[in-house]
Length: 181
Image (cartoon, rainbow, N blue to C red; front, side, top):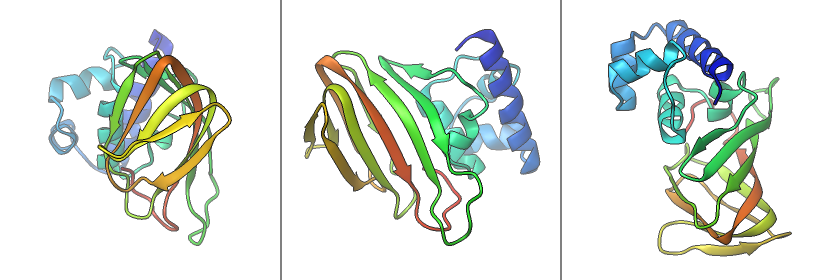
C-alpha cells in the first residue's frame, strides 16, 4: 500500500477502535499483535499483513471489507493480493452481509484462512489460472471458468498452481451476522 492508503486505513482503524471504546492496549491484546504495531498502523506508518487486518476486523466485530473499504488499493501478503470490489451497505436484519473481492495469487502462492463466523459461505469463481481451495487436507481443484461454494466457517486454504490464479471471492455472512471471521 502507498503512503496515502496507509494513512487512510490508519485513520479508519482508529475511528473504528474509538467508536467501540477500546484502547490501543485492549485491541492489540485481543488481536494478538504488539501495541506498538497497532499504534504504527493507526499512524499510517505500518505495513499490515492480510492476517493482521483480518484479526483486527474480527476483534472490532466488523467484516474485513468494512475495515479496508476506504482503501482503494489491494492488501498484499506473500504473493496474494486482495482488493474489495463491493460490499452490501444497507443491510436489513433479514438479509446477509456480502463482501466481494478480487484475489490475485502469484504462482505457487499459498494462504491459510481462519474460520469465518458460523454460517458464512464463500463462493470462488476462477477468472484465470488454477487454484486448490478448501479445508486443510481436502482441497478442491479449480480452473478458469469454474465456480465453487463452500462453508467458510472452518479453516480453509488457498494454493495457486505454478501459473498463479485470479479469482472473484464472494463472502456471504449468515443473516443478521455482524461480526467478522
